[in-house]
Amino acid sequence: MPLDRLAERVGATDETTQEFYGRWAGLYDVIARYTPGVPALRRRAATACRLESGDTVVEMGCGTGANLPSLRKRVGPEGTVIGIDVTGPVLERARDRTARYDNVHVLRGDATRPPLPDELEEAGLDVDAVLATFVVGMLEDPAGAVDDWCDLVGPGGHVVLANAARSEVWYAPPINAVFRAVVVLSTPPTTKLRYEDDPHLRLDAKIDAAHRRLRDRSVAIADETHIFGVVRLTGGRLE
Image (cartoon, rainbow, N blue to C red; front, side, top):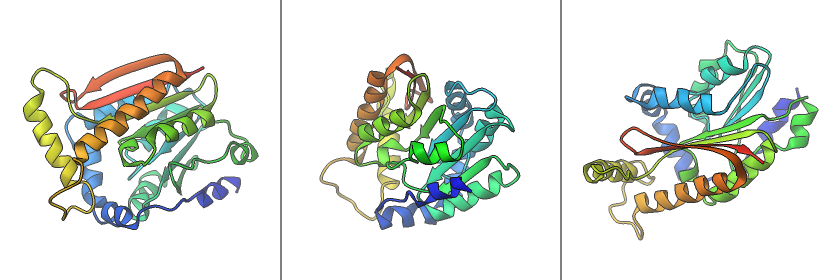
């Protein structure tokens, strides 16, 4: 099947990062599905993709597949859902979660090197939307990745980003203190006590760059904040 060729698009990725997220796949799955506010956020992100029956949607960094059933519900049995992630153990959970759907394809690949349009054309597919939740902060060049995703979708399609960054609400200081601790603990290697630059500031910069690039590439934009202002959701229809 031509879709299987997409799995070959695996780039070089830091082995420590893969081991870290692979080791904590079970805990990550619980957090992704049951943290208060996160399931509603995931539904909102899927809605922002503006999918219709028969559409094709690609999720970059699908993790354990928490979004995939919701995306499949929106495209229906005639549509196609492609979930891409680089970490084997989390993908196994995603495959188990979507095994009953024959139009959901979970592939191991690098989100910074998305499937090529000609490969999708061979499979008879045009990409209508790309979704990336809690992914761009892990990328070396998040704005460049957003450009690639926009190019993959093309004019009239949608790209949706949802990411956690420091809150800007009036009661933000205690929230941001907790957020910083979570970021440090979830940044491999977690044994480091000191960093040359604070991980949460580096994360903020990456997320700002990615969301700004999406706004620059879009003609219709939805910008929202969720969960005490910590999560930013940007959806764009491309020009």
